[in-house]
Image (cartoon, rainbow, N blue to C red):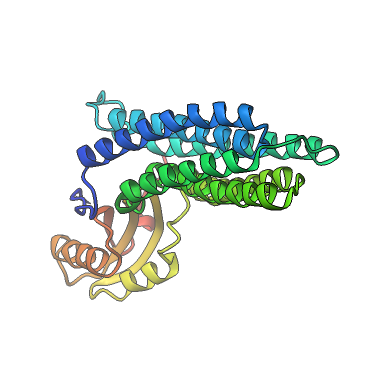
Length: 300
């Protein structure tokens, strides 16, 4: 027996998510070019690292937009959940891209640390400040939707780590401009890489948990089992599974052994109410079995 209603999501609806992602993508792509030009002009690795990170932002935002579009497309009957898991795959790709960018930045920072090149501090500071402004605007545009979707969260994390990277590049620009501390540039680059790795680890861990069909972190499977066992008319709960299809879509399936005195339809209604009200789980599949059902099944 099933309950297929899905809880309405809070925050941004899908068209608004796509619109805001489009604006953020346009801003990031435009300023990425400015940072590449500025990085070569000033000789700053930190700016080029920030531009490389912004390139991963552009890729992440493009992938996020594509995943949102595809997940809403009509699907063939063989794909019973549609294309909703495309968003999780996009989040996995975003996290992997973050790791690659971080490793490349760390390698180049190590190469430059032994002989830091001459860097123009003031232009570097001004360009990095512009990058921070662009990232803050993008963070504001995506902030309301980041808790609805791992895919959007991945894009938001890209922007957050890039904004922190811009702060590091600004600090390096000030140090070079005022104090001629040339080592500040590779140091800021290494710090940017560490921030990128931190963002990537959090995103990849959450994404892999979804792909492994682990229980969502905010739900305790033992607590759910105890709650179902406490429903009047339930003798036993077994084969309980709780997993995430895609961000915001939690599914549950289980077998429930019923006592003799209640009709299955009434028992099912009480079980659904507990799952909906206490755990906000809407997409459930519950098999109600009479006592002794498993013992009476003949092996073919």
